[in-house]
Image (spheres, rainbow, N blue to C red):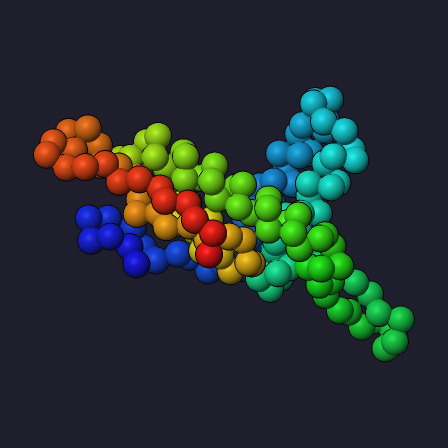
Amino acid sequence: MIPARSPIAEPASLRRIAEQEFARRRASLAEALAAGQTTRGFANANAQLWLAIAAHVGAALPELELATLWPIGGKRFQRAEDIADPADYRAEAARARNVAIDKAESAPANLALEQRARDWIALAEAIGAPGIDWRGPPPSSSAAVGQQANSIERKAA
């Protein structure tokens, strides 16, 4: 449940989050590859993790479609487990969630970062990554007078 102090909405559609994140990650990997900052093998492996995350929550991406031999012209969608090892894509989702939380805590007044952290918590939990208890970023320094700062309590679900 979102704390009363926050005007943040409940987590957005997991499919939409995964679709947007796959597109964002694929674009950044393409940029890094073009700049010579990564290898084609690393870019493909990392993109597969993000595609598997999207597949796990039922995202509708053209990259997930496969042509079938019968019926001719038919299509089926790849399963997340066929794209990447579930342990690997769950670990990547947990890593992305933790990065989003760290960014939200570094800028407590930025509601967009807080929403992104909450979205990532919901997405990581939905695909089976270890859960955490996060109450939101600490209040800004001006609002923190007489209050204790919130903290992350990371614990296995």
